[in-house]
Length: 84
Image: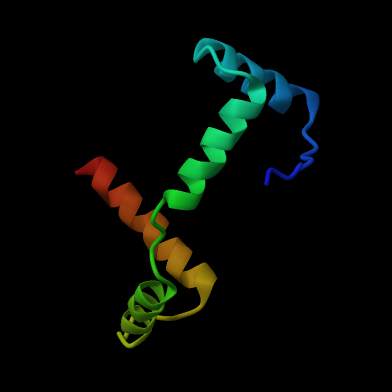
């Protein structure tokens, strides 16, 4: 059984979707249904993979220091590279 779904869009969004549907010779509703199906069928990265990457990065020992000092070092390095 079909159910109605109401989605509110600002004028520019709706106009863009209507144009995309027109180019595909579809109604706006058909285009939206296709877009929702595509989004539903898409694969998304699992959260565990992202968390492992963050934990791996956090396990390393990175240089730390006062931010103004670090930024000054970076700027100084840029100056040396331009002169070389």
